[in-house]
Length: 346
Ligand SMILES: NC(=O)c1ccc[n+]([C@@H]2O[C@H](COP(=O)([O-])OP(=O)(O)OC[C@H]3O[C@@H](n4cnc5c(N)ncnc54)[C@H](OP(=O)(O)O)[C@@H]3O)[C@@H](O)[C@H]2O)c1
Ligand SMILES: *[C@@H]1O[C@H](CO)[C@@H](O)[C@H](O)[C@H]1NC(C)=O
Image: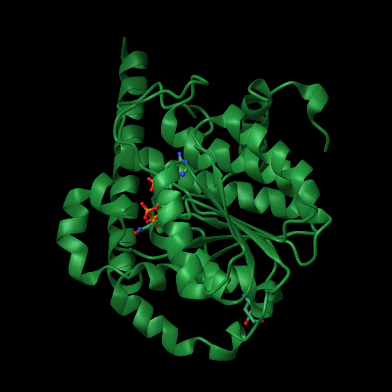
């Protein structure tokens, strides 16, 4: 009847609004990216960098970097090794990890570089790794959640979780949560999470964490996961005031991840992409400097500056209820694959 017709009309206009909104966000994001996320964007932002911020020595402090065998993670590990830090490279492939370890040790002259083999998408293994690390080491000063990937088909991990979500969101949550007690006992503890400006096009979606209900689009799932990292960072910062948390965007960087997962974007943008060293700059700054901790915990950074985690007029803010719902779901999923609780202490 007429009542149904109105509902249908309302529904379709609502859907149209959503489409227009996501189109608006994508356009605004791309224009912003062309100005700020490119190599030219880095060069212009870096004119305001304070060189002496990085006059620090971190001899005696330890740093864990996930995905440290390539791209931004490897450059971050190298920069920290050059400052004298003990570096724990967390990688999923033995040969690639060993090649990176050798290169970092040779270029930095620092022998305190260690390899840990872990696939971040295997949530149960993330628990096991973090528990074992806590038993073996008496401190961890900085955790850098850098490993990330964009898988363009819907794949499930051995824990039955969608792979992008498992790697980029749940793996980061479990590793961070499990290491928090160790970091809280350590000096000047920090957690830096390499998110992405791509998250600006997404509002936190708590209804479909495993992407079961919509047509699978790897780019959009990745962007959602990167939004989830930013939300997680805000929540964990409030809950753990002894630790300084930050999330950041490295810019558009020429790395294997981009070449493989987004070949067209890579080909089109290649001359404008940042070097991995430029992409790592803000990660290194957040991990090492006093200046970084002058800003509050829980913020989102780009080129050494705390910036908004939302585009103007983009409707990407979440309610307290949505954030709590998301964190509760993460906790439930994390606990559902936690190995034998008796061996676990917090
Ligand atoms: N490049 C960009 O333009 C850009 C922009 C925004 C954000 N980011 C973020 O920057 C971070 C680093 O990426 P990148 O651009 O430097 O790419 P990359 O050079 O390909 O490095 C990605 C690293 O993550 C590791 N990794 C991926 N999945 C993993 C898993 N399941 N377990 C363990 N390690 C895993 C990779 O290991 P393998 O070598 O074994 O594959 C590699 O070491 C990612 O979080 C990415 O989302 C990059
Ligand atoms: C971050 O810290 C700098 C230096 O103290 C300050 O100028 C800036 O306003 C801070 N940003 C935010 C968002 O708090």
